[in-house]
View 1 (cartoon, rainbow, N blue to C red):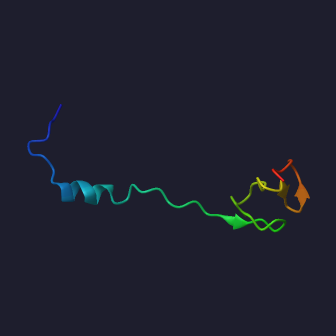
View 2: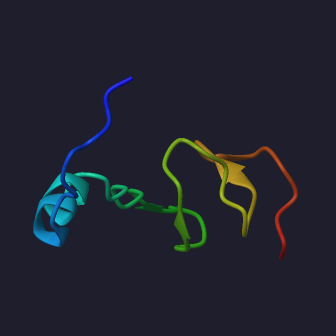
View 3: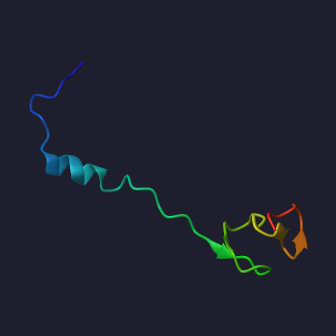
Length: 59
């Protein structure tokens, strides 16, 4: 198995890692209570999804 002959510099290592960051999660606003929530999911605060209550919220 091949082994590296020389060690890579910190700049080269950091350039390689420049694309490894995770993207920020998108968020939307609940039309019922106005809280920030993940899109296409029931609101954890009020429990509404698409205008109807699907789970019991925290309130």
